Image (cartoon, rainbow, N blue to C red; front, side):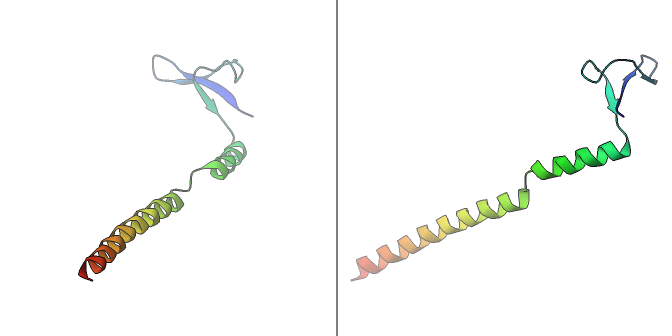
Amino acid sequence: MALCAEVTRQGFVTATSKTLEDCGGYVLVTPAEHEQLAWTHELFAPHWPTAEWTFGSVLAMWAMGIALGLILNLLRKAR
């Protein structure tokens, strides 16, 4: 069960009787709740390696297209 906690001016962490909706401090969760929240977060986390490969592939294809266009223009002018 999650618990609302706040830090006092002296630096101590104290539990409060506030609901989670009204909690203005920290929410302490059990290890099981943390595991469930972490698993849910992983479902919707961005997959950066996929995005990086996609961007890199598009950039590489663009560069190859420019290079191929230059080569074809040189061959047309050579005729």
